[in-house]
Length: 153
Image (tube, rainbow, N blue to C red; front, side, top):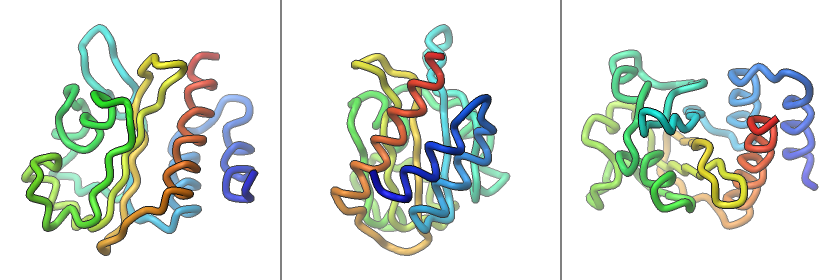
């Protein structure tokens, strides 16, 4: 297990402060923006648990994300990582038009799941164009799995 994973796992012991955990994830991946959403089955949306670096004028758009909308919603719907090398130049339709206001370049969102049961999403982003490596993606997925275990209690 990498030092990055050990440090973040240690922060999840007991009753974790999810904002602190997200901040540690961002530091470990050298990212400036991030979100942690929990799946709300009753309302069929992802509810915001913690965030960093998101402009306040976008909060109404990220507090509740419908399935399939934006990067987090796509990761939840597909149940697989969704990556954009440069959100600012994205023409795939994955990123919502207002997402460009985040100034994020490279972004990665992974589902938080336990055995195929969607529990939420974890997203990170850099302010420069960037393609996350397979190892970085795998580490973020491991972190997401550990979050799922905590949420299941």
